[in-house]
Length: 368
Picture: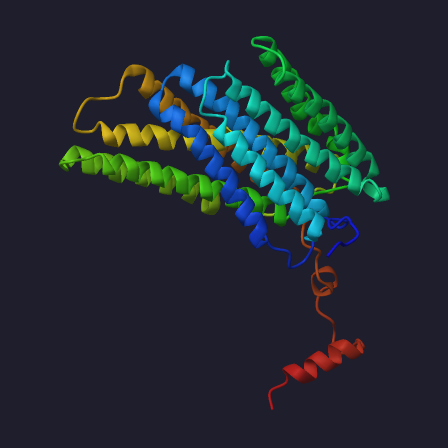
């Protein structure tokens, strides 16, 4: 029922560990919240709508990242962990519901209050993990920063605009900067080199699925199919497939990320934060493709809509190139393969003695 916490990533990689069904369920709920936030962007595909969507998207993704970063190190899958995970799933649903109203209304206050409680849940999780001596410095810092940020978010729900937004900016800055100033601690308390990238990869593919849903929504609005409408739908779906292909096959962005040195830790932070424009670009691209397909037989996109869609595709492209550069650097830094005894000393002469292992191997290899 309740298990003692332990650092699951002492060696940076727990053999055989895979994403659990609860973690996948958690990711699905968060992407559903992103889709809920995106309904406003579908109605207002403009710079104003983009800024509004981007702010709410960043907060939802940051809440997902907070839980994911904790669970990759300390998840015990006991009753306490499951209860706190379910609570955060409920809270993100509350955030999504309150994202539909204007930012200067009571809805944004409800959004901030739900987000503050989510940060307090994370505080409780890190305080629970403080008993682990090796991780105490990291857990203490994260618990303190999340606590301060949570207090600011909760206070913002009680004050009017525009003061509310200034508190949001300050709280978000604390949340974003804390992992950056804690980079050196990642060497002693690393994430799971396979499990955490797998979580990122799952979040990515679920977002791509939402973009596919947007493409199908655009197709559904076509009463009479024309060559232009069919071409728009095929190109839109092809674009999402190309993003999938580049991310998983060409770049292998969800591959293992070991952290053994400060350089590895810095590279990991760039890799992690580099996913934010990628995710945001995928979400905005999906909505843009829906508009393109829906208007294929009616009217072309306005200049502002074209600019937003082009910018989103550019963000995806640049983020993918950044992830590719990081993966290339990782491969170059991998230790070279150690030469074998035969390569170091050359073949043995017939007069040299052989070890029992070599003799046994020769006997096994001799045809009978």
